[in-house]
Image (cartoon, rainbow, N blue to C red; front, top):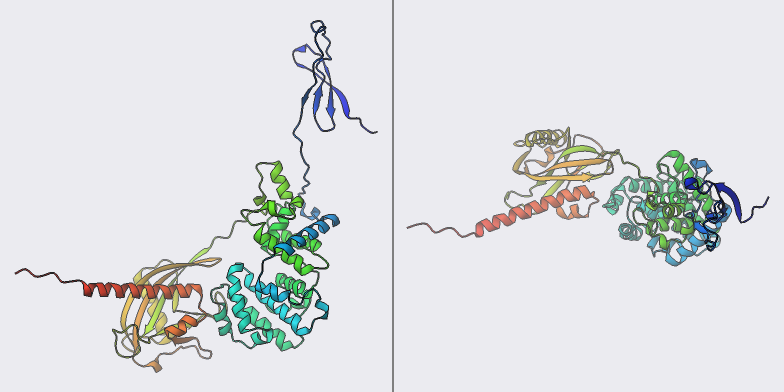
Length: 498
């Protein structure tokens, strides 16, 4: 039965004066009362008929939500609209980045290009995506350009040493990425089957996970597969107003499925980059520019924020409490070895002792100044004892026997923060003269685990930002001490009384 514009029902009015008032409710939700239809008309006979009084309800727009994440999907029409809008926006607004110039150099005709060109493009995508993990785009640009100048192809990289790669990577952090990139390059070249073109084959390469495999396959080889990074998670969580832990396994799995529903069949690589670009430049974590978003009309988080003042677009995805960083403590000794017998000339071609870290674990295989982990906060006496034992057991550095200590000074403290560790370092400068270099050794046989390097070599090595900070503190300390000494010598003496 088709309803008319109004449905009638009775409501009781106050004071008993009006037993009921015939009323209407409009289809828009407004309550309309006919105030002149009462049972008592004796005092209103000569009055004009009053106007209808309309009390309008605030219109509401229904926004579908679901508590079950499995019920969330993109319809075919939604997907088509999002693809068209996002690709158009990307074509007009994409950033000019060096790896994109390489990946776009072959145009869209990937089927007819030669193998060398396609592998060069895939290699550029691989390097850039690995560098961009946990690192800002502006930081990566210079590193990428230097890397590609030194190792322009996968074969060039496969011939590099880990030390060379670490030197090039120094400052980017998460050094395991560089090691995996080198190992993966060697693996692909050694197998001799060419660069893998599909996700399934790419996943078998050392260091290539689901995200990197999807990026290489879609951007370089046009395989229709999704990619999901932090930017994509944020965009999709807002598009569908997903109130789930973004790190939860079920949520991540669903996000990958949603991304797969959206990826464009003809331009999968461009679409994946567009989605990531949107998250990086428009749909940002704290201050999204919704007015500039090409798919804001499909965004449920934005619709909800307009309906409820208490809700914000930035409520999605939900914030996850990060695991508390554990505190660690270390005594770091910058051991400077004097060249020659002039103990006063500390600015000559002196050398510094560096130690190679273990091949597994944090900062594996990287060089650093000798350091000893402590059980907790430690006083100077405890730190000195721990350092002396380490230098003796590892390098046979024994004061009065294999070396003489020229000076030993406490330089200060420095806290270096890793993703899961807060490392407090107690830094000291130990200047020594060796009595016999042959007696100084590393008791571990085989691969070189320590070496002496001069200032020039130290400045060009692939040292971590933490090690560089320690060295910078040493240099500043020396400079300050030197300036104080010069001022003391230049200060005029007081005239003695006669």
